[in-house]
Length: 354
Image 1 (cartoon, rainbow, N blue to C red):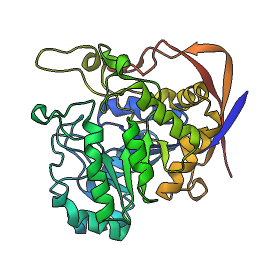
Image 2 (tube, one colour):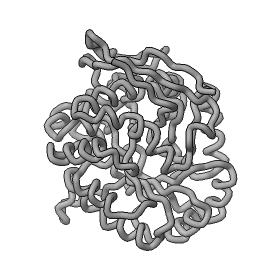
Image 3 (cartoon, rainbow, N blue to C red):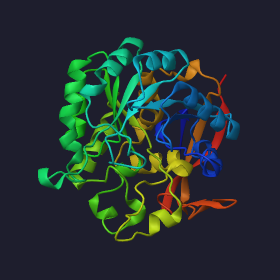
């Protein structure tokens, strides 16, 4: 049994910076993808068009055969003029991180109203707003990692109402409430779903640091909602891996003062993993839309308008293979999600599309 997907696209990926990028970036193509929507939460974050283009050039130097769609980090440094400049330079979106909710989000926002002039400019020139859909934990308000996403959703509704033509993507949804919220909104609001959130529930990360990510996986009913909307083939829900690599020592250890790093690394196995998971809940027929068609349509990035079009063919393996336990390059190493577990699909052919 085999299935072919034209030009798979990952609409949310972290490619880091420095020496670790040399290990990470080639894994985009190894995992079956030739488009990467790149997150800007570096140190320091990418807040200018010039820096975004410099970063893109750094990534292209490592692997020029992947198309990198670049984003800016929503911060006080951003201005409407910079938004217009970014649009002219080919920048695709702006990523909003609430302060402190995830990796490198210390410079994140605290008030969305402050950025209304930015959102107005984005709506005017048609840049996408990518929302990390959580609010910071607050014990006094009973806000924590399990309800941070539902508590955020009123912000989504308010932004959509204020800027109805602004394209908004709610990133890495984990709850039934988020799925229903996006469905309620109009055609300018979409949602990414990760591969790992189609697999995990709270029991899989509680006490297991390798599966710990932000937002955390939620309850079985929430996971079912994600699976159901993928199985439905809803055109405004598509893959954004949120593949977030951290060195093994940052994932496997913690202290009373420092928690383990939040994030799982799926890039090297992403397309086979997506096929494996979708098959497991009867949605394999939706693979093409989920990993390519829906996201490309929402972002206005049809495969036929881009260089390096590829047809990626996967085959269901008669003998399931174990996922590699570690990837190493010089002094850098990473342990992927699903390490040591069986996976039932593999990439067998990649051909150029004329």
